[in-house]
Length: 250
Image 1 (cartoon, rainbow, N blue to C red):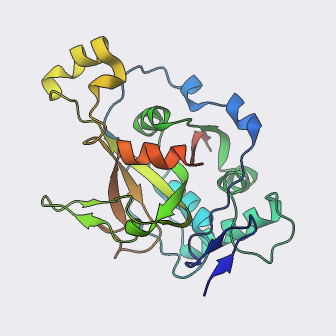
Image 2: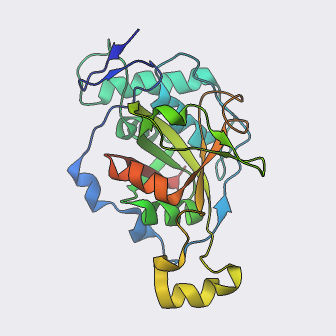
């Protein structure tokens, strides 16, 4: 059965209920202003819990709870906690009332701020900002469009699972970027000189990837994780996507 979300979009899958709420003031808070490093690095933040929203339309609450249970914080939280965050976010987002499905990424982080868990949060504006943030600051919560082909990550020959952007868009989802792997166009021996001479052009966007932790249980991808190339994630972020990163955790 389809669900009409508060922003007017219709989704067939109740789980895909991330609502788009842009605040132009967010442009004054770029995450890059907090990062002194110049070159991207590969880094993955440990996340030992895989939450499962079931059929609940609470992806924003689950994404932010996954951020809390991952390093560098590593809290121990439950699915019930994620649903609480989601329902509280609905009370403060831009849509009146609570009798509707979905909420926004910004409302979710504001609830964690009210709970005293996050002091300051910033935004990544594009794939380069996101890679730097995940590499040096911690996991990021993404709000991205979801395509039909993203439901079932593809198993590669090396045992890893990959997301492909095949099929039509079927809704919007909130998910955590918990790590990134940088692959240089001419191998690691070229990394330092290549970056100095070419900057981001030295990075292979088709082979470099971000690891996503989803909230659909252990059966999705590799225990809840799947990889997406930087090239594909850049397309999702460019399609009214967003990336929020806590830079002060309490």
